[in-house]
Amino acid sequence: MGFFRRVARARLASQVIRRLRRAGFADARYHSATFSVSFTPDGDDVPSVLQLDGLLAQRSRGRRRRVDRFVAGFLRNPGLPVDWHAARPLLRPVLRGVTTPSDVGTPLRRPALPFLAEFVVVDHPETMTYVSVDNGWGVDADEVFAAARANLTAATLLGKATEPVVVQFVDDGDAYWTSHLLLDGWLAGLAGQVGGKPVAFAPDRSTLLVTADNSDHLPGLFAQAEAIYLASPRAITPMAYVSDADGRTVPYRAAPGSPYEICVRRAQGVLAAREYARQAEQLPLAAELLIADDGRTRALWPQDGPALLPVADEVQMGEAIRPWREVAPHLTEQQLTPPRWHGESWPKAADHD
Image 1: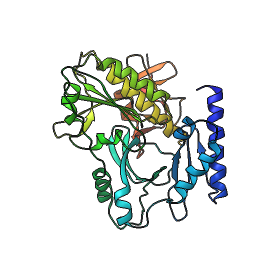
Image 2: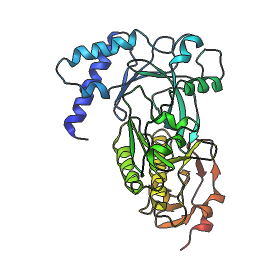
Image 3: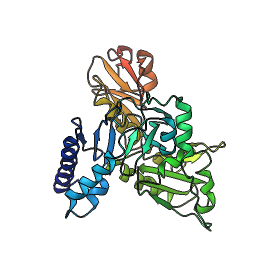
């Protein structure tokens, strides 16, 4: 990202923060990685998150007045609804990395896909608020998740494709297209519109790409999804997904020897590396995860001493490289998400060339 764009983003965020602090929200904070501002409404346990992309896209002239209207619009309906009756129609499910959002205290979430979790948000006109574990509505988590999924429209496409095509869903902030991957049977139902068994990519929160498994477009979409994922402050995943026999969304699996095998392995590695890097920001002794050209992953044991290793194909310390299966017996699994394994010191039995 260019210097001037970073400055423009920071300046806009500072305007929003000043407006929030004048309204009494002293904990308002800017998160440059996601281009958002978080703050905690009175009576809430988790912060609300204001995404600023839409404001930046508008002309700079008159932006201060738009900032005031933007913040005021949210303040009229702050935080979480006080009861289940008011909350239920506003709930939406969202896919996020397991280590995000970092600015939310104890959000309600459950595992969805490798390195991804399903969260629930309250959908306000101007922003969204993550639902906390202790939301005070008197209903269990399963009911909250079920209500959020039921509120998606499960939109369908008209027409039929006579050959494999690429369909791109662009989210305007209200459609929650990437969340549709959480609905059983929805992705499989697009077969007629994309010309074959649907394969989906959700590289960031506003982009969903779908094509057919037998499409010549598929290799290019792996590259496109990775580029969007790595560049976006609102990234979700570079991986490809399909429906299983029960209609549930699962990772795309390439057959051994398939030309897509390396694409799949690399996408998995890129997602794992980013999620482990986010986790490491708050985790002492966390080892780095590297990705080889062929998509293999390697945990980098920084020195001969204690380390928390990400799950990988290989482990490296100095010049020594060992398969994970050789080092794993010397490690202890930790209760972390994503998972890591503790090693006290480089296993001497494996330290030979």
